[in-house]
Length: 438
Image 1 (spheres, rainbow, N blue to C red):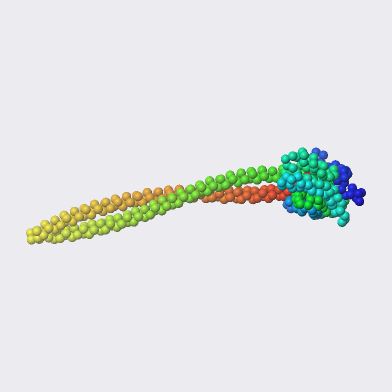
Image 2: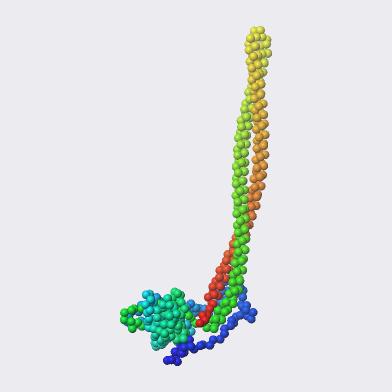
């Protein structure tokens, strides 16, 4: 059985396993990778081909590099009782088991406990650490604690007591490590004995870490992955730089678009104002033309009245000529008609004056209408020019939108490439192995 124990746990009994130096098979003399990861297609198939080149005969599937840690706090051992705690089996040969056990002493009573460690191989229990007393750590006097622990704890070369602090900043009562060789799977059994204490129950904290084995092929695969990773990071940085430049250009296009949109809005507002002004001028011109027509009708009516008055005067003249023969008899009537004629002549003069005034007003209104039409024509020409500018700006904006869309598509391409590079990096880093040296 002792020979089997030496075969199963060489580290525990001081046996050293010879290992050869591992060199990277895929690395050239100058340290550069033989394969360029950037030459592979940036697709799932390309990534698979690159990972196959890294893995070669050592596939990642089915191998877990993660360490397994089993911890427990405040495990109670009743007074006068024993307790055996089995841990989950260690499945792989070459796995290292590192452990710490701490006897809890809340009231600084200087407690002790019988502790041992065994493994079950093929149904047979083999002691890894013989039963021996461990002491509770004394925080105020570490040196005395170390001396007492050395006397009270029996351990192999790999088992120490009161060593370095654990993750909880506690000093363990005992700690150690061993390697499972050629006997997996095995079950680790924590043996606690408090049968000699009649009144005082005890409690412990323990932590067991299972470190998976690392062989030569895994180390070579890790070296290949580490050798290729800098080139992948270079490609990723280059894509980041391209995307940054593209983003700068897109931002510039956005600024130009904003400026052009503002200018178009300004021109649109100006066009709306000009259109409104032209519409108002047109309305005023129509009102002036209607007023001129009214004036023209008034002039026509006045001229018609003058013509009627002329006809009336002619009639009066004829009557005077006819009555001149009867002037003696009709002298009084003649005088009245003469007076009436003078009045009619004055009214004719007034109507002619009014007709002349209306004619002048009509001429003035016609001139104003002509001027308004000239202004309207000038504004229409300006409006046409502004509409041409607006169409030109809209064409430029359309071109900028096309350019921006092209840049957005290009940026999306770069983003996909960066995501692919990140996936490459993650996949390659997954193959890293940092062997833990004793």
